[in-house]
Length: 154
Image 1 (cartoon, helix red, strand yellow):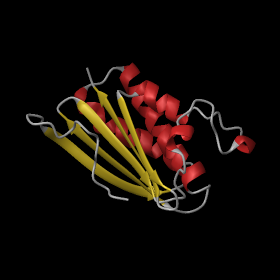
Image 2 (tube, rainbow, N blue to C red):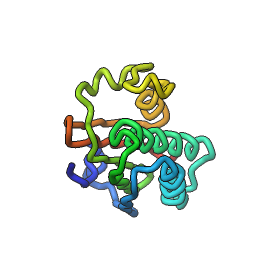
Image 3 (tube, rainbow, N blue to C red):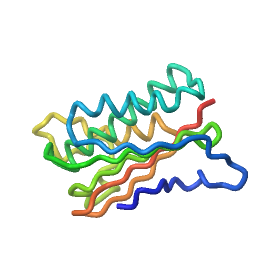
Image 4 (tube, rainbow, N blue to C red):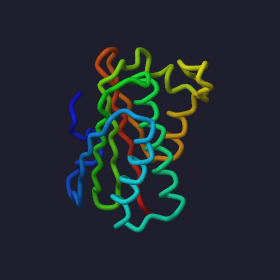
C-alpha cells in the first residue's frame, strides 16, 4: 500500500508542515507500546493536554493491535507508522500489508469482531473514531489496511 499520508485536509493551502516521521517495525504485540510512546514523543512539542495525549495513545494502540491480531493474525509482518504535524494537527497513518478487510463498513460497526475466540471487544475502530477528530480506513483483501487518523491539538 502507498505510504504517503492521505488525510483529506492536511494539504490545505496555507497550512505548514511542522515535522514528520516514518517508522517501520515488526508485527509483534510488544511493539504496540513502542508505537504509543513514539507518537506521544512526536506530538510533545505541541504541548498536548493529558486527555489529548491519552486519546492519541489509545487510538494508536488500537490501530497497531488491529494490524497484529487481524492483519497478520499474530504472524510475521511489517507495520508502517507515518506521522505528520500540520500546524496544530497531528496526522497518523498505520499501515499493514496483511490480509485486509473485506467489508470496511461492517468492520467499523461497534462490537463487530472476527476474533471472538480471542475475546476481542470489536470496539477498535469505534475507539479510534471517538478519540480522534477524523478517521479514514482503506483496505484491500490480501493487500493490507491503512488507517489514517487526525487530531487537532488545542
